[in-house]
Image (cartoon, rainbow, N blue to C red; front, side, top):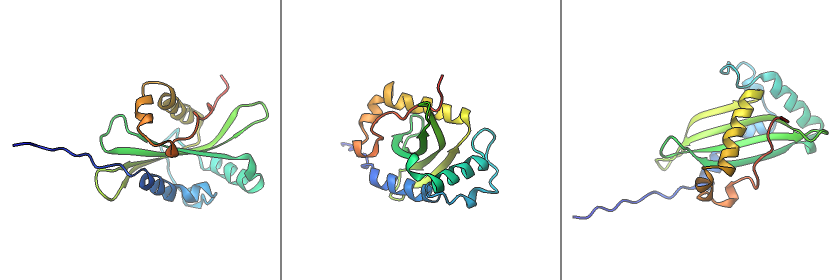
Length: 163
């Protein structure tokens, strides 16, 4: 008796589409749905999103967007779509407006969002960036190489601090 195991191919386009769909209002500056949110402490502030919306309306060319898909290091059948928005200030430092991470369970045909995260505060952005740096440069390089280039931001995003 032989047993054959087959792994379902991951549909990165589906992950990206679901992530984009989930973050489209935020990316376009439609933030009203977050006004009365009660986010976990240290994650995001609505006032930070208002500043983003104002900059988006007044100087949209200064804002850079990026995204990448990653496989979870800790949860099988889980991937995340990461969307981030930043600008480079005159002093060369990156000012991040937000980072949104949409975690998905990809174990069935319908990819289900399991955890959405939104960060605007400095410490949470620093933590996200540390994780992202690892994805681009450290032990996760093997995991990154398994994801098609089309779904990876071309370079490691700049750090959200100048230390």
